[in-house]
Length: 409
Image (cartoon, rainbow, N blue to C red):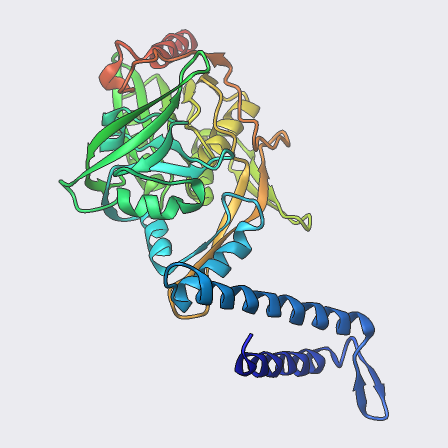
């Protein structure tokens, strides 16, 4: 470390020491002859902090002096901040740059050019598909939940660089991007293949509905964003106006979204009781409850491995209250809640942190476990499109129709 850097370092440590001493003087210090005495535990902490700061400065200096390529200060600072959050070992917690924060905000409201695939860092350090958004180029191309995206336009990416991969996947509509997919076969073997996908303008229309078999309503919810409850109620009232006798709610490949919106929809389907409750590490609990009123028709819910987070809250409450049958395959298993906090640094950055875990009405936390449906039905391996438009091949929806008809009888 240069003499100039060393002087700057000790000045910073001195300032930090003075500030900390002043702030602790009322509660942690002893007043002796009007002089502030720092307790040994606080002195040790400051000494340890100074040592770690010195280590950071040393590593930064070595990078700038010896690393093969040039690295600017901003890149190093961003890397340090990302590293702090990454040290938690939680793939759902993240330091967000201004661009990343903007992109994340678009997932709950707005439009963007891209392929329409929700991804998450996998435990194997690979970019893992939670689900393709219904009707988007990603779904049409055949991307499935649990697929691994190992390269974009020929460049390999691991989970720690997922944001860079997502940025490349997004782009102007009508332009092409090539994804290299790693998929596990049913026999446990892996296959790798490329998909050429043309980007489109992605508008997150999260609710669509129709009538199946004359008197059975079908509502597909693809995610829970700011407009989902309003759209759900509009479609529900439209179906009720046509005097449907039963309702199928399709949550397959729904990666989740806003908890409040999910609770509002659950309130329309359940009787009085707890929809879900969350608990922080300090034991603080927050309950989301439903009112006594509810729609009074038979209900079936479709789920699969792409049903995650908020969609598991809704399906878990329905299962616990025995309000309706869950049909399909086991859900994804995300039972923790994140909160996004913009940082007061005026550079547009933010931090997304896991702050609590949630429990179904029966007190079950499904994180890493998922929810087993009441009736397990697998889809054909080669099916690309699910829903009413492909009722002939959609074995899960066909089973839901059988069950709902029996309920109506």
